Image 1 (cartoon, rainbow, N blue to C red):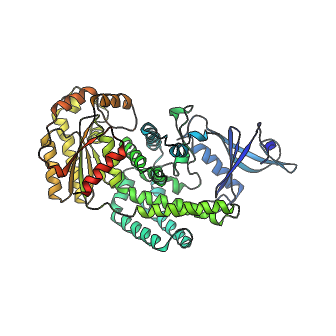
Image 2 (image 1 turned 90 degrees about the vertical axis):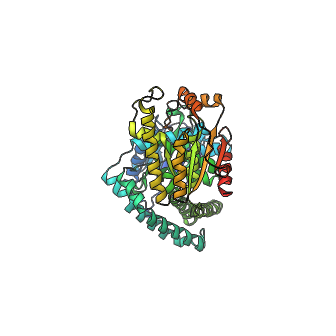
Image 3 (image 1 turned 135 degrees about the vertical axis):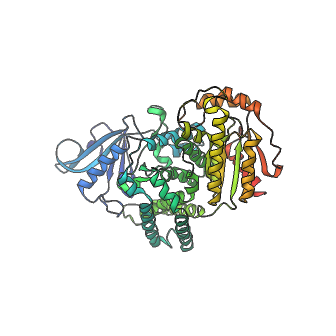
Length: 513
């Protein structure tokens, strides 16, 4: 559209084109025009359908991006042969109107510059957890996003991949993906159905990648999660873990698996999702194949130039290779005990490790929160929820759940202080009984680092930890040295090191066993 088509002064206009829309960057404003296409999974073929989609996009994105970024829906008018946004004339289309977000603060750009840090990942995890906790759920949503629909979505997805063989996807790769999906969904059908009953199916974002995240200090919370799916409820109504897996996959795709696992760790802690990591291979494979398919669609779009198509082909092949990588297992079953006093960094490490190994994450903090809610968080040491009896009940429940998960053939990561030998011994015996690899990870950090961590994480939504300075000092004084486990089954980790180095040290230790 020409400059005179806009209701405000415009010095420069930039057009961005996708397979379903035209995006006009007009000064500090953005206008999004949907293409009149029917691709099966979305239908913008009529004016009325495009109006409904524009209204849905503006409304739904208020959840992850408050603060007036989404202005509303505008009418595209035609008057005396000229097009204009608003004003007189016949309404020929509709546009989503947004305030322009700073491109240099987009997560994908900041990743390229190496500027995304722990606090930023924590902010994303907290905002997504907030969106999911408040998201609508119910019978209709469970029906459209539950196990049955997941099976149908996968079947449709795989069917649409077959025409891509020889263009962006190899036949052998597609066969591996199909075998993996069929086997995984059969093996984990009970878990996927249980998540539906437990309320994990909600009205989610549906398309959360790093280019849909903006770190803008002028916005509430300094963050915006935008551009959610509005065109297909079945794609947006999903398992919350599948929603989180999209960003995790995107971080993998961009070469940041450490940040991917960190994000899953913080998000899982925030929402209390113990089994998310178990489902990550399936969920991330699904997201990668979807992106590969979307990039492949550009190859048959006559409006897209040859250079853009070549780039889309390269991206599609990379996505399919990534999807293939998720089909590989993690070897023999493991039981990993991540120990250390509150604030030592064990919870973050345990969560990242669980994501890395696709293991069940069982945390004393999460179990304590489930049992006691918010009651007694400020209780004195050895009283209330921290009394010996309360601690014993939490560790007993942790043991029971670990035994159940190991019996199902899953790997398990336990996150707890485990400062007393009598807390550790039952877990160590359990690993022997069920023939799981045992590794005890002792986390350590200087006192001043622990103190700083506790100050910074007060009130953070991503953590279920109830660590306090007085609790840390008391726990540190009570630590009973680990003498019951041989050196081959234990490792000490300095949690001030980069998380990727911590994981690599543990991975090497497991590999050497």
